[in-house]
Length: 165
Image (cartoon, rainbow, N blue to C red; front, top):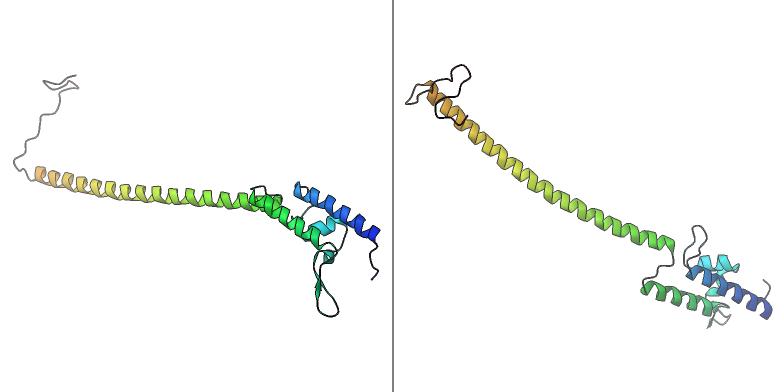
């Protein structure tokens, strides 16, 4: 693999910084995220330059563009901590999470209202049943001729004496 010249490094760094600006301003390619993979793709460089390397003796040395990767990740984190979400997918995820929480609350409220309505329905049905039993008891009592008198029926559509009509 050919070594990069200083001119190539300078050109690549400028491309990386330009890509950083675009990403941090929210301009992302389709399916892109605010990450190093997208940064490398937008700048036209390989990702390997963003990560540390090992010398032959096993000691670590920084990657060619590792300082830019660290700067980029720091800026992304600062924006996220400030409440600015540069990644539209992350914004969509946050929006969907909020929507899900709202829907869960609405379902819980509806369940509570439904439980109240069921309790009310049960109470009303039991009251109707009790009233029905009382009406049936009174009808039986009237049919047996107990101490109950029937009122005279109204004559020919006229109101009985003492009515308001």
